[in-house]
Every structure is written in structure tokens, then in C-alpha cells.
Length: 112
Length: 115
Image: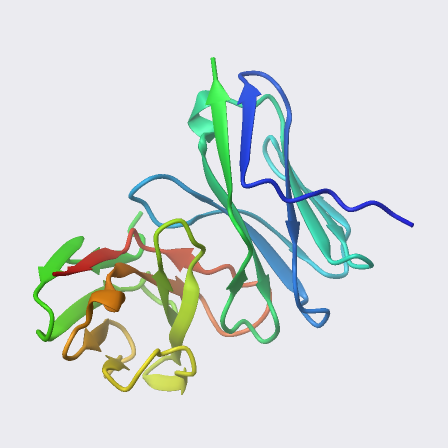
């Protein structure tokens, strides 16, 4: 069978490394997914989104991968910087742009 | 550019008091959402509006929670007879319109502490 990346509550990397953050979502009917970054004392900040008819989408230094078969999302951050340190959440939209369902967050710590 | 604005940023109240939290969405955004975020957890949905209509309030924890958006812009979340378990960060988000492919943009929240 296909392996699924484990969700880790914390991830520590060195500056310049690539980071991969994994997320499992719950609803097979979800057709839109968003990654958010949340810094301490701030609200979630939009990073990148992807629709269910895609399996990959790239932004600036970030890539989101979607595997609908196993209901799994990942966020890849290239050349991680200290400013990337934050909690990262994936969120799924079960339909019609209503309430988002947030996954468990991953705290990314980047050391220089 | 102006994002979602929430006030106050911090609110301390005694158990049993009523509180009101305000959200100014991004100008022109039709949809407005309220979420509750407990420490160390992801946001959890409370309610949402399309313009002035409250379309879903299934996430409100009790009838002590009430939200309104009378003119389809600013929204207020009111909590009556506050309890200690109401202590959390209350986040407001808005999106351009209801529908897929519309990311929700969040404010920085109101941190509510009930003594």
C-alpha cells in the first residue's frame, strides 16, 4: 500500500533546509484545501490553496501536494528561513465555502 | 492594505459578565466567519454570515453566544453570562463571496480571559 506521511506536532530544521509538513483531512467530499501559517499572537495567515482537481500547486518557496486517495496533504517549504517559524495548519472546505475544518497544527522551528 | 480588524485585542471579564467582540471584515467581502481557538488547538467554527444573513450557527456552544451582522459589514459576537470555559481566542475571517476557491482571511483575534 501507499505510505502516508505522519503528522508531527513539531518539526525542527536548520536554516536553508527544505521542510515538509503533513496533514490528514477527514472528509472525502472536501474539494478545497488551504494551508495557513500562524505566528504567536496573530491570526492564521493564508499561504497557499489547492482544489481537489489538482494534485500539486506551487507558490513562492512553497508547494502543496494533495493525495485524495489517502486524504493527505503536504506543504513543502524550500530553503526554510527563521521567519518561517510558526504553527502551520491545513484546513479543508467540505463544500460551498462554508466552515473550514482545521487539522492538527505543526510547530515549525527554524534555527540558524 | 486593510485586512480583517478585530477589537478589542484583549478582553478580561469576570465570570457572569457579558462581553461583545467586534469584527470589521475586508471591504467588499460578502462572507464573514467566527471561530474559537483554544490554546494549542486549531480554530473551530462558530457561525457564518453571507451579507446580513446568518446562514449557519451550528458551532455556537450554547445559547449564551449570539452573533449579528445587521448591515452586512461589521459583525459583533456577544457572549452573555460568561463562564471560565469561554476563555479562548475568538477569530473573525472574511472571504470575497460564498463558494469554492475563496480563501478565508483572518484577523488577529480577541483574546478573552474570564476570571
